[in-house]
Image (cartoon, rainbow, N blue to C red):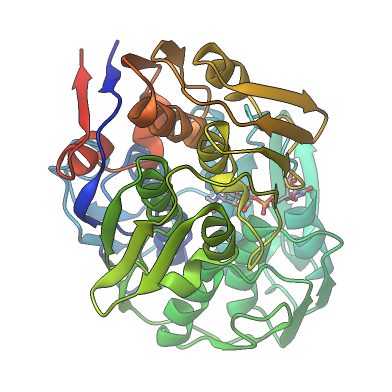
Length: 431
Ligand code: UD1
């Protein structure tokens, strides 16, 4: 099985290109279900998750032109052309949905376009139970009937699928990126006005709304927690450029910090990094926006211990919690990390401890006492972002770190070993 081998101790310098955002590209792919015209995405990352969603969409009748997308090899195309002249099947099967939870995003668009949808429940996930109740609550508020049958969500619009969804007021009790995206897409083709309160404000949600607006949707309140969507009869085709990946950029910013390095993250947008910028600055790594991307430089000999609490955007992202923990393992002093978004998202902790880190976890709180040195070790990647945190730790550890189970990594990072080795890391993929 493939693994990544890192020899620690190199200071990273140079320029790294930031890829298109996985979490923006996935919902943007799903918009093809809302229109019978072609939808083209540029700056699409070449990742396994894109391939998985392509298979889901193919099952609904989408023709996709990007045969190499999903290879995860870097050979894929940045342009993804999709066309769904008609929906051939409204069923998203367990075999595909269970591979990637974001497949649940097809539910709202299928329902809005055809009046029916049958989507497998995604099931449990390594970083917590991750329910879909908010997605269902919103669609019910829009008039859908929903039944759970044999592990599937079976949903239909009034009059047994013959009427449209109806605009509604939706007040999210909790911020959910996926539920906001699902319901925004559904609302674009609903009858009347939908208002969402406590909606997610993540840059990926804004990117989705911009794409939908260019297809003819009427949406206001972008980037705020109050979205207003006036339903239209049809959406037309679009060509849209996927925003750059703030989580990948943030991971490389931490790589600069942890190696005492200096990087330019080409195409990166500082404002999308949210609270990471202040956390990095407090720890001794400074980020500034250039025309070409983000300049990151480590200004302290060792990072300062800095407390971090994950929150919905613009707060500190849960998808960068594992990475910042790696930085804190070698800090001077102690850092308290609090994970408020997902339970069970500390599975990288035992692996970091195997590398010499001093960490105690109690529920959602992790206390990281900085040590002088980490030591290379064989470690197992347990989820996507945890995999990245182990590579970051490997970059600074003394000796060799071998990260196994890297299929998680390939779900969300495009050629990470090639990008890091181009800026001076000793890292390679084996097997
Ligand atoms: C998205 C991102 C993921 C990121 C997460 C939080 C994609 C493809 N994935 O996931 O990388 O970690 O946002 O920023 O964009 N919840 C419910 N009921 C629901 C839906 C969610 O209780 O119906 C809970 C979840 O269990 C979690 C919290 O809400 O505790 C946030 O989840 P959500 O924002 O929905 O995450 P995803 O959209 O799945």
